[in-house]
Length: 216
Length: 141
Image 1 (cartoon, rainbow over the protein chains, first blue to last red):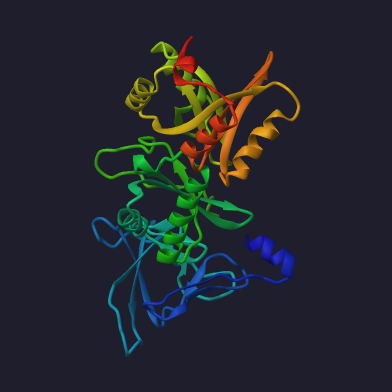
Image 2: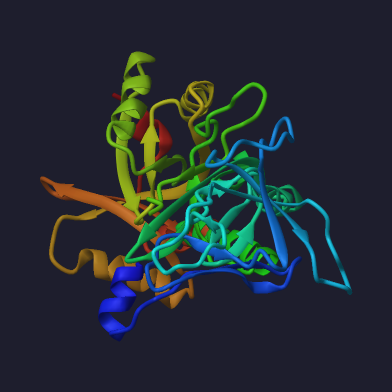
């Protein structure tokens, strides 16, 4: 996607990382060499921890990024867990900066999905489905990337009596589910009605998400 | 006459339609008429079978989602304009058709039709001396 933006707009695209709990964008940024994001260490102390044991990991290991703010006065935070997975690189950059660099985040330590920049927890979908009479909580989210844009498809089983003979009513039901999810999450979603008992039942933690996006 | 029709919700997956007929065939249930309505994501198989209630139970056991609805079955002469004449009767009586399926062979055309008021449609057909087909005739094989 970056290459596409750079080619079409004839610009150099620079990645910036941030989270609103800290200051929003600007926690770290790339330089002209585009080889990792320099963290503004004079304001934020980064650490990488194991999300399960909470132990700090050795330099260069992949783990959850944690921040402590040094200069924030209004809402300072100490060892704040970002849930973003990345690794830190302490070598001096080709640009001459000695600030530690973080890699582009490779995922999350919780089940949150980021779709078109919007945060989505599968539990949000589940609560919509539980509220509607027509739907069952048996669902699967399929995330993909088409033409550089994230797509979200919800496959869901509906209550038996709603598998109707009339196509217009089935389509209306599809649109209703779609609309409810869009208003609850702010994300546009394609709903696919599937046959009863076809979503895989699993013991313990159910598999609710298939993410087919290829992360760079 | 008004007869029972089974509707089965099917995802667009290869082999799924075959499975329905496989289950029915193994239970010695005959399919007299059928039609598939398709959308981009799913299809609805509508069919008239020899023992609709039994067929429904069997398909349900196999986890198919089955619905029973009512359609009117009738015959018209296999000749140009005869279906038009039939549908004129319904439209004059302000009855809306949801869908129909059928085909012709020999001297007759056989039609299964779903509309918003089946009783009224049957009355209109009887008043115009149309040939209605009873369930017992259809279920025979």
